[in-house]
Image (cartoon, rainbow, N blue to C red; front, side):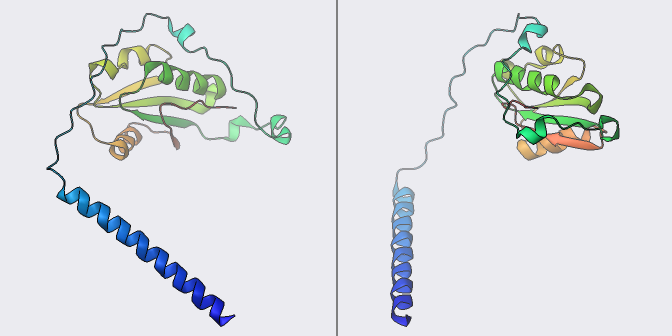
Length: 179
């Protein structure tokens, strides 16, 4: 038994040593390579502004019902639940995905529980700002624009500072909320 443990430990030490040597050889190769060339941003296509009415933009196929059977029939007293604000920071997102996210939230959230959906535009360029298009979708949709990119966490903190709801939910801009 003791011999088996020693062999296992020796094997583990050898594997870790090989992995470390492999990592060190790769990192030394990277350091000895030519100096870093500044990356050029990917060219972004010029996007057209939205001409589709908001009522059509918010339509989307409802996802398949995936809840367990015992949850489907369950009823909740909404009057006892706190209201929420949903904060969604976004950077260079596709407007169609934002529309689906907002449409699913508005369709699947009881209106009396939803104070607002606040999208935080984290310093997007003119092709990805969409503030006017998003605000036109629904009265509960608002947009806060950071004049320069702050990063995900700072954008979330900024969004949270612009709401007074007792509950704040942070979401990604490319999710579909289910029931």
